[in-house]
Image (cartoon, rainbow, N blue to C red; front, top):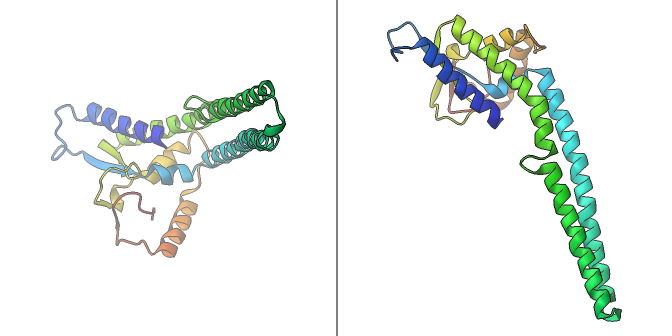
Length: 215
């Protein structure tokens, strides 16, 4: 979610810059609102499908990497068992084979899970288009309703209290529903109410802290 939170922050700056030329928030008819990006993503079926695909690929590739590391362990154990029976040349050859196999495992791990690896590339391919649509929907809502800044409650920003009336997450999801499938508002509310009841997280019309469950 890090990239998405960066998008949310960018949106806040863009919307703020476009609608507060004199940087006068209070008294200018504009206000600060917020979204819960985790709540928004949870209510986009395409995002859930993408996460499932990524989890499946991650599990598959982890097994492949583990299989090569298991082979390294097997080769090393066999080498230790037979070491006394080997000539110096044979020892060097076996040791090199173990080193090469271990390097193969490391290379495969980097190929799949490195900072620019296949999992990262696949995540970018699947998630970034969704994030961009959410960003666009949020910006449209902010511009239409003349909101000066949009904060993300799930970003880790220090928010001590946030009133539900300033939460535009559902408005963003409704706007997003014009370009992609989202969970219906009434179904979102039912799910959120159930979650809130199970966790006892009601705060009497507002949210305390960050990442609080959506009502």
